[in-house]
Length: 268
Image (tube, rainbow, N blue to C red; front, top):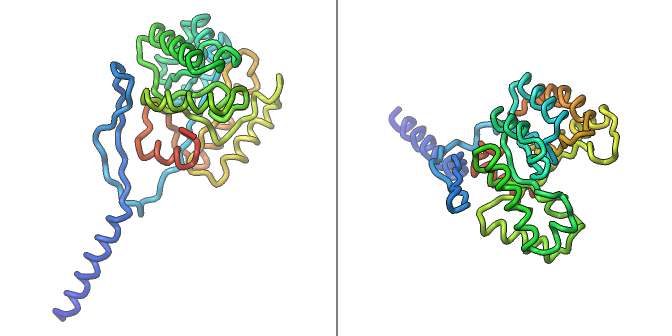
């Protein structure tokens, strides 16, 4: 009888030690606005045997605008969902109250660009950084808050509007500043043409989200994107039914950031 007890105990300890090898950690991250750096603090250990939740990040580019941004905020509020807005500085200056409403609604606000003029932005590293700083300063001035250290490059990080050497120098500069550039792995297609069918937008999102535990969805909240507004309620409903947890880049953990880098959604 004693021998069997000892054997059971040995096996139990062995399994416990083995499980610790594949242990995962979730950490909270903080942003040092004075030094413009991302830092991390406390970590919580989670056993890897626990099922990982499906996570989705709704992102909206190129706003704020006077009509559709408010409609999107209303839909998000009605569904108790948060999203990330990568804003254009000129648009923010034109619609300061709407930018403030985005901030007051608890949404994440990150830098996209000030001018969205590709030729001007991507002329060289200096012109890109000037554009970034201008957008950053507008957001901070109008909201009273430091913008997210997660940004979205105009055209994405693999755009063809500038040279490979130039975009790589920009990426290195962003890394040195402690910033993260975020792309997407689900494209709604709402910018493919001047008018896009609502059903096409919904189908694009639903199809591309299949078999994904991490989804970063690209959408736009510009003046003429009423079809994005019309598609959004059904998109949110679908994602909820599929068991996704809605996140923003304000509450992303280092473990989640690492996963995005691995999936080539971030810092590609």
